[in-house]
Image (cartoon, rainbow, N blue to C red; front, side, top):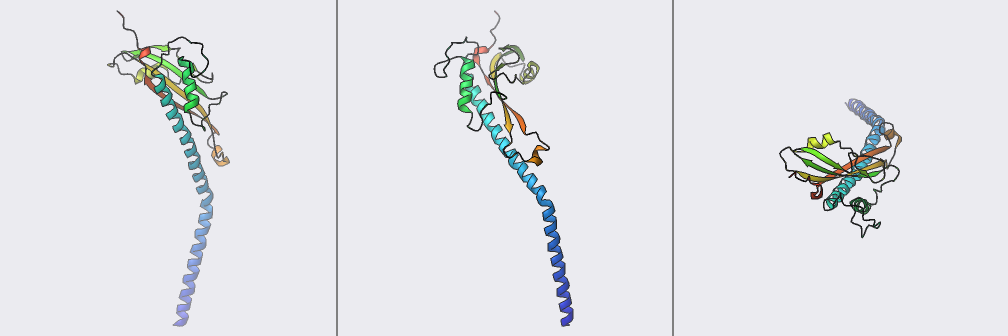
Length: 206
Protein backbone atom coordinates (compact mmCIF):
# COMPACT_ATOMS: atom_id res chain seq x y z
CA UNK A 1 0.00 0.00 0.00
CA UNK A 2 2.80 2.37 0.92
CA UNK A 3 4.67 1.43 -2.22
CA UNK A 4 1.62 2.26 -4.38
CA UNK A 5 1.28 5.64 -2.69
CA UNK A 6 4.93 6.38 -3.28
CA UNK A 7 4.61 5.49 -6.97
CA UNK A 8 1.46 7.59 -7.30
CA UNK A 9 3.16 10.57 -5.62
CA UNK A 10 6.24 10.14 -7.82
CA UNK A 11 4.16 10.06 -10.99
CA UNK A 12 2.17 13.10 -9.88
CA UNK A 13 5.36 15.03 -9.03
CA UNK A 14 6.94 14.10 -12.38
CA UNK A 15 3.80 15.22 -14.25
CA UNK A 16 3.74 18.57 -12.40
CA UNK A 17 7.44 19.09 -13.06
CA UNK A 18 6.98 18.36 -16.78
CA UNK A 19 3.96 20.70 -16.91
CA UNK A 20 5.91 23.48 -15.19
CA UNK A 21 8.83 22.98 -17.56
CA UNK A 22 6.50 23.09 -20.55
CA UNK A 23 4.92 26.34 -19.30
CA UNK A 24 8.35 27.95 -18.92
CA UNK A 25 9.32 26.89 -22.46
CA UNK A 26 6.05 28.24 -23.88
CA UNK A 27 6.51 31.52 -21.99
CA UNK A 28 10.07 31.90 -23.27
CA UNK A 29 8.85 31.28 -26.83
CA UNK A 30 6.07 33.89 -26.49
CA UNK A 31 8.16 36.44 -24.55
CA UNK A 32 9.78 38.07 -27.63
CA UNK A 33 6.36 38.43 -29.27
CA UNK A 34 4.92 39.99 -26.10
CA UNK A 35 7.85 42.42 -25.90
CA UNK A 36 7.35 43.39 -29.55
CA UNK A 37 3.64 43.99 -29.03
CA UNK A 38 4.19 45.98 -25.83
CA UNK A 39 6.89 48.17 -27.36
CA UNK A 40 4.65 48.78 -30.39
CA UNK A 41 1.83 49.93 -28.09
CA UNK A 42 4.21 52.24 -26.24
CA UNK A 43 5.45 53.75 -29.52
CA UNK A 44 1.87 54.21 -30.70
CA UNK A 45 1.08 55.94 -27.39
CA UNK A 46 3.93 58.38 -27.94
CA UNK A 47 2.72 59.14 -31.47
CA UNK A 48 -0.87 59.60 -30.29
CA UNK A 49 0.32 62.07 -27.66
CA UNK A 50 2.08 64.12 -30.34
CA UNK A 51 -1.00 63.97 -32.57
CA UNK A 52 -3.31 65.19 -29.81
CA UNK A 53 -0.96 68.12 -29.22
CA UNK A 54 -1.18 68.96 -32.92
CA UNK A 55 -4.99 68.81 -32.90
CA UNK A 56 -5.18 71.10 -29.87
CA UNK A 57 -2.68 73.48 -31.46
CA UNK A 58 -4.56 73.63 -34.77
CA UNK A 59 -7.82 74.31 -32.93
CA UNK A 60 -6.33 77.15 -30.88
CA UNK A 61 -4.67 78.74 -33.92
CA UNK A 62 -7.89 78.52 -35.96
CA UNK A 63 -9.91 80.01 -33.09
CA UNK A 64 -7.48 82.92 -32.92
CA UNK A 65 -7.53 83.34 -36.72
CA UNK A 66 -11.32 83.47 -36.75
CA UNK A 67 -11.13 87.04 -35.42
CA UNK A 68 -8.56 88.28 -37.96
CA UNK A 69 -8.95 89.47 -41.53
CA UNK A 70 -7.07 87.16 -43.96
CA UNK A 71 -7.57 89.75 -46.71
CA UNK A 72 -5.87 92.61 -44.85
CA UNK A 73 -2.66 93.83 -46.48
CA UNK A 74 0.71 93.20 -44.88
CA UNK A 75 1.38 95.92 -42.32
CA UNK A 76 5.13 95.40 -42.59
CA UNK A 77 5.53 94.99 -38.83
CA UNK A 78 7.81 92.03 -38.32
CA UNK A 79 7.36 91.41 -34.59
CA UNK A 80 4.62 89.22 -33.17
CA UNK A 81 3.45 91.74 -30.58
CA UNK A 82 2.44 94.69 -32.73
CA UNK A 83 1.56 93.18 -36.10
CA UNK A 84 -2.04 92.54 -37.12
CA UNK A 85 -1.16 90.71 -40.34
CA UNK A 86 -3.00 87.38 -40.51
CA UNK A 87 -0.16 85.46 -42.11
CA UNK A 88 2.36 86.65 -39.54
CA UNK A 89 0.28 86.45 -36.39
CA UNK A 90 -0.88 82.87 -36.86
CA UNK A 91 2.63 81.44 -37.29
CA UNK A 92 3.59 83.40 -34.15
CA UNK A 93 0.68 81.77 -32.36
CA UNK A 94 1.79 78.36 -33.63
CA UNK A 95 5.25 78.84 -32.13
CA UNK A 96 3.69 79.79 -28.78
CA UNK A 97 0.81 77.30 -28.64
CA UNK A 98 2.51 74.10 -29.75
CA UNK A 99 4.06 72.26 -26.84
CA UNK A 100 7.78 72.00 -26.27
CA UNK A 101 7.87 68.48 -27.67
CA UNK A 102 6.21 69.58 -30.93
CA UNK A 103 8.67 71.94 -32.63
CA UNK A 104 8.12 72.49 -36.35
CA UNK A 105 11.20 71.57 -38.34
CA UNK A 106 11.67 74.19 -41.11
CA UNK A 107 13.02 71.50 -43.44
CA UNK A 108 10.08 69.08 -43.23
CA UNK A 109 7.13 70.41 -41.19
CA UNK A 110 4.65 73.12 -42.07
CA UNK A 111 1.70 75.30 -41.14
CA UNK A 112 -0.75 75.81 -44.01
CA UNK A 113 -3.45 78.50 -43.82
CA UNK A 114 -6.47 78.90 -46.09
CA UNK A 115 -9.39 81.31 -46.10
CA UNK A 116 -12.52 80.14 -47.88
CA UNK A 117 -15.70 81.86 -49.01
CA UNK A 118 -18.71 79.62 -49.63
CA UNK A 119 -22.33 80.07 -50.70
CA UNK A 120 -25.07 77.68 -51.78
CA UNK A 121 -23.08 74.68 -50.58
CA UNK A 122 -20.07 75.43 -52.79
CA UNK A 123 -16.77 77.25 -52.50
CA UNK A 124 -16.89 80.59 -54.31
CA UNK A 125 -13.31 81.65 -53.59
CA UNK A 126 -10.15 80.50 -51.80
CA UNK A 127 -7.51 82.79 -50.41
CA UNK A 128 -4.69 83.14 -51.22
CA UNK A 129 -5.27 80.26 -53.67
CA UNK A 130 -6.30 76.59 -53.84
CA UNK A 131 -2.97 75.44 -52.36
CA UNK A 132 -3.24 77.63 -49.27
CA UNK A 133 -0.50 79.73 -47.68
CA UNK A 134 2.50 77.70 -46.55
CA UNK A 135 4.62 78.90 -43.60
CA UNK A 136 7.68 76.80 -44.42
CA UNK A 137 7.01 75.98 -48.08
CA UNK A 138 7.00 72.21 -47.50
CA UNK A 139 3.32 71.35 -47.97
CA UNK A 140 0.10 72.55 -49.57
CA UNK A 141 -3.47 72.26 -48.34
CA UNK A 142 -4.68 68.67 -48.18
CA UNK A 143 -8.25 69.76 -48.89
CA UNK A 144 -9.33 70.11 -52.50
CA UNK A 145 -12.21 72.37 -53.40
CA UNK A 146 -14.32 69.30 -54.17
CA UNK A 147 -13.66 67.89 -50.68
CA UNK A 148 -14.68 71.17 -49.05
CA UNK A 149 -17.82 71.29 -51.17
CA UNK A 150 -18.68 67.84 -49.84
CA UNK A 151 -18.56 69.19 -46.28
CA UNK A 152 -20.91 72.10 -47.00
CA UNK A 153 -24.67 72.18 -46.66
CA UNK A 154 -26.41 73.61 -49.72
CA UNK A 155 -29.14 75.08 -47.53
CA UNK A 156 -26.68 76.88 -45.26
CA UNK A 157 -26.26 80.65 -45.61
CA UNK A 158 -23.19 82.18 -47.23
CA UNK A 159 -20.23 81.84 -44.93
CA UNK A 160 -16.52 82.40 -44.60
CA UNK A 161 -14.06 80.14 -42.85
CA UNK A 162 -10.42 79.74 -42.04
CA UNK A 163 -8.65 76.38 -42.31
CA UNK A 164 -5.51 75.68 -40.28
CA UNK A 165 -3.45 72.61 -41.15
CA UNK A 166 -0.33 71.42 -39.37
CA UNK A 167 2.07 68.91 -40.90
CA UNK A 168 4.53 67.30 -38.53
CA UNK A 169 7.07 64.53 -39.18
CA UNK A 170 6.97 62.22 -36.18
CA UNK A 171 10.25 60.43 -35.49
CA UNK A 172 9.87 57.33 -33.34
CA UNK A 173 10.89 57.73 -29.72
CA UNK A 174 11.88 54.07 -29.30
CA UNK A 175 12.75 53.38 -32.94
CA UNK A 176 13.15 49.67 -32.30
CA UNK A 177 14.14 47.57 -35.33
CA UNK A 178 11.17 45.20 -35.09
CA UNK A 179 8.86 48.23 -35.35
CA UNK A 180 10.71 50.02 -38.16
CA UNK A 181 10.63 46.78 -40.15
CA UNK A 182 6.89 47.28 -40.65
CA UNK A 183 6.34 51.01 -40.03
CA UNK A 184 8.54 53.80 -41.45
CA UNK A 185 10.54 55.64 -38.80
CA UNK A 186 9.21 59.00 -40.00
CA UNK A 187 5.41 59.32 -40.06
CA UNK A 188 3.89 62.57 -41.32
CA UNK A 189 1.04 63.61 -39.03
CA UNK A 190 -1.63 65.95 -40.36
CA UNK A 191 -3.93 67.83 -38.00
CA UNK A 192 -6.43 70.51 -38.99
CA UNK A 193 -9.18 72.74 -37.69
CA UNK A 194 -11.86 74.81 -39.44
CA UNK A 195 -13.40 77.91 -37.88
CA UNK A 196 -15.90 80.48 -39.23
CA UNK A 197 -14.45 83.81 -40.33
CA UNK A 198 -16.80 86.71 -41.12
CA UNK A 199 -14.13 88.66 -42.99
CA UNK A 200 -14.19 86.33 -46.00
CA UNK A 201 -17.95 85.83 -46.31
CA UNK A 202 -19.08 86.26 -49.94
CA UNK A 203 -20.36 89.75 -50.69
CA UNK A 204 -23.98 89.50 -51.86
CA UNK A 205 -24.56 90.66 -55.43
CA UNK A 206 -26.84 93.73 -55.55
